[in-house]
Amino acid sequence: MITKEEIEKIVENMIDPFLHKSLLELGAVKDVKWDEEKEHASLKVAVAKLGSAYQIELQNEIVSALKEKGIKSVGLRFAELSSALVAEVWKESEATEKKPTYIAVASGKGGVGKSTVSVNLAVSLARLGKKVGLLDADIYGFSVPDMMGITKRPEVIKERIIPVERFGVKVISMGFFVEDNTPIIWRGPMLGKMLTSFLEEVEWGELDYLLLDLPPGTGDVALDVHTMLPTSKEIIVTTPHPTAAFVAARAGAMAMKTNHEILGVIENMSYFESSLTGEKEYVFGKGGGKKLANDLEVPILGELPLGQPDWNEEDFAPSVYQEKHPIGGKYQEIAERIIGVLEKSGNKVES
Image 1: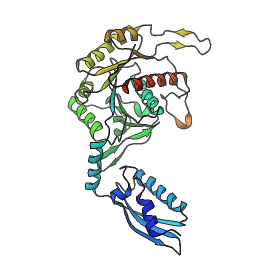
Image 2: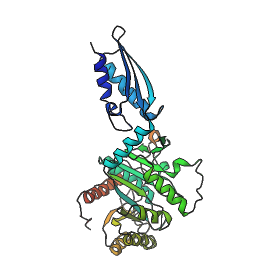
Image 3: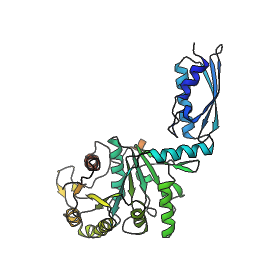
C-alpha cells in the first residue's frame, strides 16, 4: 500500500508547466494527507496564477499519476506562489536560457505575401522540430492571428504575457489586443514601446527561432527592429514584378546599412500552374526575385507559386499550407535550407 511519503515524492517530482521547475524546487507541495482506509489523498499545491490553463494542466497530471498508483480519490486545493518567487524564477531562466536566432521577414511594399511567408515559414520550422515564435510586428496591418485561425487570446500571468500556441508556433500580435478589428492610430514612439513590450514582456520560453513579420517598407517599426536586434537575420520577400523588386531593394539596403545579415530572397507569386494542363503562367512577369538577389548579392531561397491552401472547416487556418500540399512542400524545403545555414556557424547561403 502506498504511503504519504510516496505520494508527496510523486507530486514533488512533477514539473510546473509554466515555470518549468519541479514542484519540489518551488516548494509548491503542502499539506499532504493520506487516508489509507478510504484510499483518499488530499494536498495543496501552489501555482503561478490561480484559475489558469497551466493550473488545470497540472491538476490533471497530478490526479492521473496518483490514480495510476491505485489511489481511489484525490482532493486538490490550490494556492498562489509568491510574486517574489515567480520573479526570481523568471530572472534565473532569462539568465540561463538560450537566446533565439531572430529572423525578420521584410518587404519593400505591401501585397507581396510577406505575412503569408512569415506564417508558413514559422509553421514549417516547427514541423521540423524547432521551437519557434512568431511576432506579428506589423502593428497597423496585423493579420497573423486571422491567417493562422487563432481565436484564443494570450493570458497574462504575473504581468507577463503568455503567447498563444498554434501549429507548434508561439504567436503574439497587436491583433490580440484590439476589439473588432479596430484600426490602430499611433505615432512612432508608441510603436516602439509596443515592440519593446512584445520582445521583453512576453514569456517566449526557450526558442530556437523568433520570426518577426515586419510591416512593409522602411518605417518606424523596421528602424526599431534594427536598433533593438542588431544581430537579427533578414529575409526579403518580393514578387517577380520589376517594381516590387525595385521597392524591395530599399528594405535590403536598410538591412545592409545596419549590418543585418540577409539570408536571402523569397520570390512569392512566381507563377500560376494549371491543375488541368500543368502549364505555368507567369502572371506577374519573370526575373524580379533573381534581379533583387543579384543586386543584394544573396541567394534565392525559394520561388513560391500562386495557389490556395487546402481548407479544413473543422480546424480553419485560411493561410497555412498543409505539409502534403505542393506549396507546403516548397516552404518545407526553404525552412530546411534556412536551418542548414543557421546551424553551420559562419556559413552563408550559397546561390
